[in-house]
Structure formats: structure tokens, C-alpha cells
Length: 144
Image 1 (tube, rainbow, N blue to C red):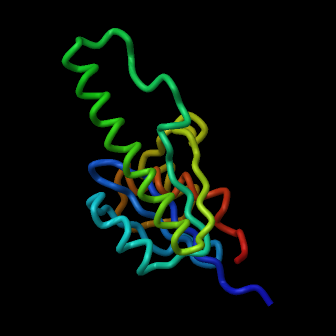
Image 2 (cartoon, rainbow, N blue to C red; image 1 turned 90 degrees about the vertical axis):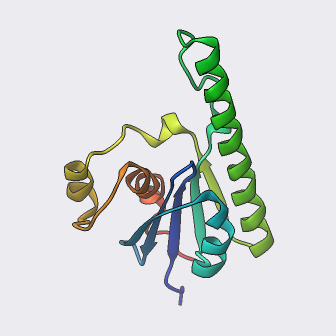
């Protein structure tokens, strides 16, 4: 008998999106601060974590940006890369399988209407929580 799966999707960023699927159904969406990542993973203790990983894409911004804008993007991407490393380290410590997905592989952003049509979720969402849910969508029925 397989135990009920809990799949956590994470869209790391300044406003980190969290989506939790239980037994294949979207059960919760949260927006957290990045420093809360370890606590949330430990508390939920999902059977699998799926996260967006900008490290999988070498080209992350337009070359037409000013030097100052390129530096800001580079700092932001560097922070997200560090949060990805934190997710991986936390999952390894807890023995939770973690899967990284590139921003491009995740697909197009969904608006609230498209998101509701896909997931059936009628509660509040934002682009960060919808991205987290989209990341974990293909794994939502995975078993422990």
C-alpha cells in the first residue's frame, strides 16, 4: 500500500511561491519569504519537491539592458541560485527527492482564469504560487 503523496512545488524568488498537492489535488498555495524555505519544507515534509532552477538556463536576460540593469538581474539571479542550493541541501538532508525544472521547461505563465481551468483552484493565487503549482503539476500524482 503506498502512502498518500504530498508534492511541493517551489518558485524561488524574493516572493517565493509554494504549491502543495495532496493525493493529486492542489491543496494549498502560499507566498513566503525565501528565509522561510527550510522551515516550510521541514514542516510540510513532502514526498517530493519540484522547483524552478534558473541554473539550468545559461541565458536569463536580454542583452539590450543597460549595464546597471544587467547588474541588477545578475544579483537577482545569483540570489535565486543560492535559494536553489538551499532547497537541494534541505531536501538531501531530509531524504526528500528534489527535481529541478528550467524556467523555459516550465512553460508559459498562467493567468488566474487559465490556472482555475487547469487545476480547479478557485481560491486566491498570484504569479508566484501559480508558477509553483505549474512546476509540480506533472508530478502531482506521484506516489511515495
